[in-house]
Length: 391
Ligand SMILES: *Cc1c(COP(=O)(O)O)cnc(C)c1O
Image (tube, rainbow, N blue to C red; front, side, top):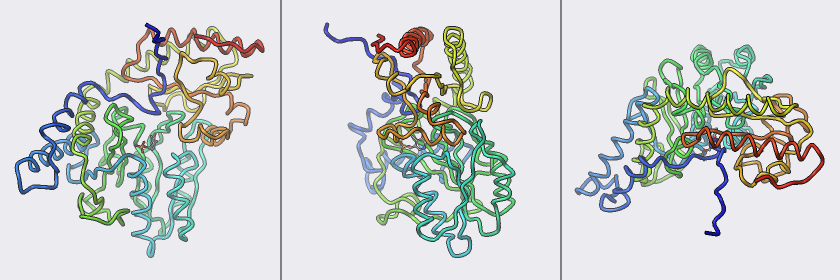
């Protein structure tokens, strides 16, 4: 056939495929079990409702929450907007101060900037070269006016894991709410909203082998966290998020959470092995490679590498057989170097020489070995000053 080989996909921080087991679980809900989960006056509605409530429990289980603390949204972008704007606007009179971090995802950065325009005082925490905040900076920024601290659990570009439990403890001391964007953390590292003193937590289904178009905001009930909703409507999801729930997608996310919880430990070990194999073989065959971000506090499925003297954009074009990225997908349309890498202290040139490699559930050892060949060939040729298409 004329079909050429599909590129090897190593961009699992941008999106993950739906697990086949998740698809299987969802299918009936696109068909005969199609009911509106809010139409509880008839059988179809009640069946859909029961399925959504089962899924709510599966999500809650993954993060140590109660089912009724789970609010379904369209994804992590909406969950982050709802958490950040919703909490800050509700508390604006008594506590007009918000703390966040310069390496947050765009949807948190822009939500906080919106609040800033509305008159909220904002403190932006910097990060060290490992991508982590300094807890002393956070302690110094907190005061009795702080409504909310929003710090992501795992960064989408460099995979660094923030000290979530320590941040939660500090926030509790000052009576500030703690929101964490866990889009890259959920299903990958253990999360416990009680032990980590998290009040609000965002999840994205398509980052954890669930369907696109659904996510979750965990909203603590004891003590109760109040939010100003983003949408007006029928008052679904405890009045926090109006709109008909997408039953099949909620069911899929629930199944994805249960699978991730069961397989987390073994999968983490497997991905760590594959990532070490990738890095070690690259370093054995190429000079001038640096790892961006933390080495120890990092999720197993992420590598972010700078190749000295190489332009990442050009490199990617020379590797059509490999799907990787040069930073976050949301900013890759612009020519600006990644703001996350710049925040780590990388020079413009080093940031532009960086690629993000994301390993995931379908990644195999043979894919890693082929990826190494592709990268070594492309980097060597670019460094030699030649333009080449490596297959
Ligand atoms: C992907 C991502 C988001 C946005 O999630 P969507 O569900 O795609 O809206 C937010 N934060 C982080 C860290 C992400 O990786």
